[in-house]
Image 1 (spheres, rainbow, N blue to C red):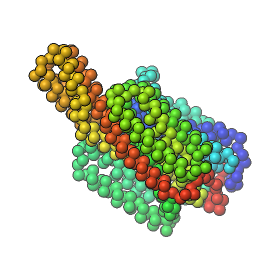
Image 2: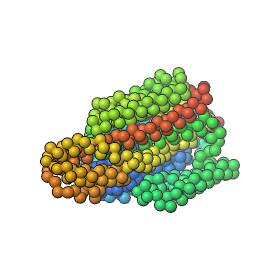
Image 3: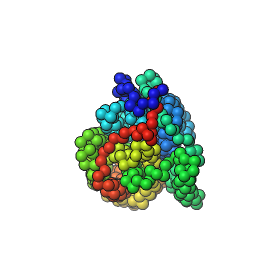
Image 4: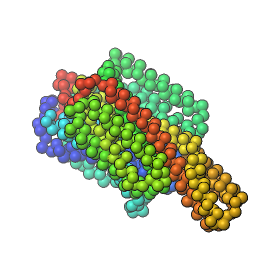
Length: 562
């Protein structure tokens, strides 16, 4: 082994970089690729909507729970070794997801998939840091940040295409199975071309801290996910209160461990840096906003407007384009020159994108076309890319390099926890508003529907009866937690000819689209409020905050390379 912190330049370093880039891309892809396949999964497996929420949230929850511990294991046992274990487990779990025969099996496989990603991802930045010399490291991190900035949106596009193509008559399953050949190739390449590295002064595992952290997260997110479906029983509020106590206990224990045995899971010293603490809070809020946005955006396109997965996926390409533009420009041009003001600008652009998208949805309602979404999606994507790409480097630049690994794990944890909380919280808000505002859609189509019923020969009194039943159907459908459920009021209709059925079918689709469009607009206002808080956090960063690459301090974080 070699303890030189500046190892001999590896001629295969760019091949190794391509491997870790592919692994990071797969991880971020799987955060959102499921969203666009929700209706297909729900239909094929007969899943309740709460189970669908868990299929989405299970990945990010287990990922967030394992991330910091995964970083510690890499320090102790070697980052290459943990990367290989993670990518092998991720590939196997992807195969299990692809062949799952029930919602429970798919949820369980997603938990394992997220946990394996939690072992794999913390090693990526560390491997980049020890593989590249100083003059190349900034370029590598910029490319990695740019890919990460667009991967989530690419997941929506690729998911839509794979579901629509129905490869080998497998339906939604290829969204997971596609990881298998990529994972096998990356595993083989990493074993050959990747160098190993570890910390010469590796910390010990903090098992108690890990249990407290995982418990606090699950105690919070589980009742948020299940509460509305179960009409908020008392135990949901007890669990939320218990989560607050668990977070407090975690903080107290970590401080005690830092003073006594050392090696806490999260070093309290990190939070002595006000810029890092404020920035981490802003980062969490940012991902809560986008976790919710990705969910309601796909619901609006598919459950609201009735689009196919392919159409929804191809439309989302424009978000990916915007994210790529924003990430590239912010990392290479803006962040090195303007520092924290770039983050503030990205937050403001995101707010503008959310506001424009919501306003256009409320204006066009059921007539909202794919080409009309291009502008708001590109604007939102640009704002997303401007914030995501430089934030990690910018915040890590505020702390000593010896703490960069733990801080990077916290930022990744904040991202995944934010996504999970966004899905849970926005699910509550969106469907509550959809239920509350259900009469809007009926009112918007009532006059036209009455005219069309008259054309089919339905007399006035019968029209009143049909419209009353139609109103009850739309109201009950909007009140459903699961938008695919057909309520009893929509199944028991008076005798009618084919023409009346066709009129009501068209009117129901129109009313549903109107309700979803205005609920989407309402929820975008919530997203704008979150982004405003994010901007306040970025304003609180020191004026001199700039993009900064990390160097390793030999006296504090000596690396052992193999």
